Image (cartoon, rainbow, N blue to C red; front, side):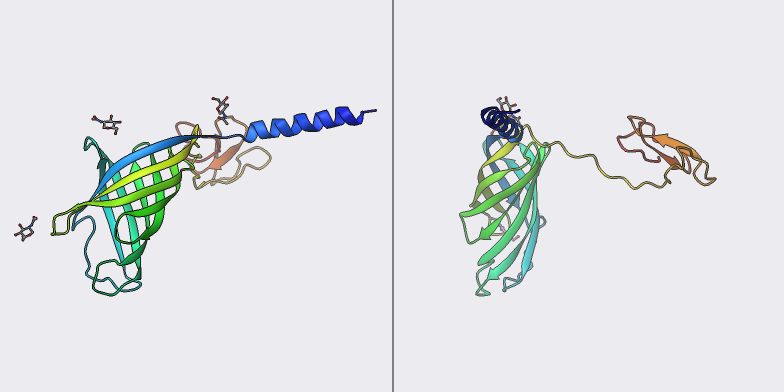
Length: 214
Ligand SMILES: *[C@@H]1O[C@H](CO)[C@@H](O)[C@H](O)[C@H]1NC(C)=O
Ligand SMILES: *[C@@H]1O[C@H](CO)[C@@H](O)[C@H](O)[C@H]1NC(C)=O
Ligand SMILES: *[C@@H]1O[C@H](CO)[C@@H](O)[C@H](O)[C@H]1NC(C)=O
């Protein structure tokens, strides 16, 4: 018979084990970048009314040494306007795309500086959560602007690796483990050789984790 105290000990051990498995480490990231918007990368369509939008794909460079890091891409929707001042108050959603990962952010753009919530990320920035403060650094009066972003956020460490992309299969499942249908004669195996698919033509050069046709 199991005593109450050993049962309690067991429960404590089990719940500790669960906590240890789900513990996640986060790393603080500080990112300071300059975004450059030109009439080509952020067209001025001259409409600043409620419900109007603008869109952009601007270059991102390192704030300190000017190294090109990637680009921003996004849209802003005017949520309050007197139709005179540009983009009086907007809801902006944008994505910063860097080589090793991306961050998404959104928030109210109300003159500058504006605080934008960092809402997620990919690659080395997976599960990003934090804040970027955007400020206007310069404007040449001809539609070229430089914006500064001082970002502080935390990311999951180690990062989430990208899941394997799904692929459309153009084959048919084997019947009784064999490919006897005339249209699908070639049996292609997954990398672990535990599953297969019947294909009309070649198999992939390198088998993938799920069985697919080439
Ligand atoms: C978190 O970091 C600690 C200390 O480096 C490590 O022992 C642990 O395995 C990490 N946890 C995860 C989920 O990566
Ligand atoms: C530019 O500065 C960043 C840090 O802000 C640094 O990581 C990077 O190596 C620097 N690049 C060059 C070319 O100096
Ligand atoms: C803006 O464009 C006008 C007309 O092309 C030009 O004369 C002026 O020098 C430009 N200003 C700046 C700051 O580039």
